[in-house]
Structure formats: C-alpha cells, structure tokens
Image (cartoon, rainbow, N blue to C red; front, side, top):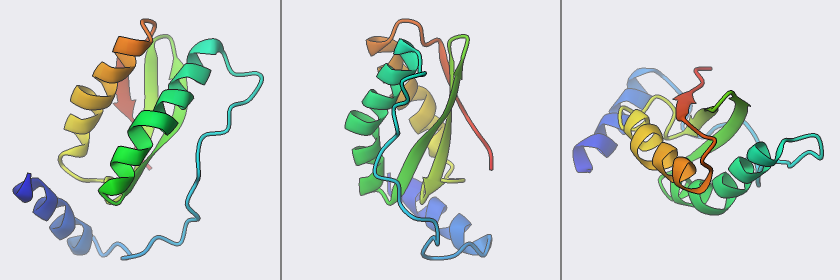
Length: 112
C-alpha cells in the first residue's frame, strides 16, 4: 500500500496540482425525486459506505450518471489520477454495487 500512496503523492506534485482544492466539499449526493430507484440506491450506497472510506485517504467520489447497467463515477482529491484509483473502482466499488444492486453491471471512471 505504501508504494501506491507514494505514487499518488508524487504524481500529484509532478502535475503541479494545488495542495488544497478550491472546490467546496460536497456533503453528499442530492437524491432527486426524478431519480430512478436504481440511481437512488447507488447514491445512498456511495454516501453511506464509499465516500467515508475514500475521504479517509483524502479523496472523494462523485456520482455522474447511470446508463444501462453502467455507473459513471468521478474521483476527486487525492484519488483523482491516482494509479490505484482504477483498482478501487473496479475491485472495490464495482463489486459492492453489484452485490447490493443487481442491475449494476460495471463501474467506469469519468475523466475531467
């Protein structure tokens, strides 16, 4: 785990990214009454199980959209551009969402 964290830190500084993001931190995903039941479940799981764990590593994860079984998520903060973020998305978040929501087939990152 140490090399992955060090890799994220080095990559962050070599890309001249700011140390502190000027974006305001989001406290959760807004659940819209027009959201489908699947989207509501995804947002609830992200807010209750995923975001707290990702925040402990200095990152955040934002729901972008859900389309025909594919969930699109945006990694932010320390997780954005981190080499291990793809593994986190695929092995961690994707497996968890598939477990709780059978309609989910895949999770893909959204590049900013």
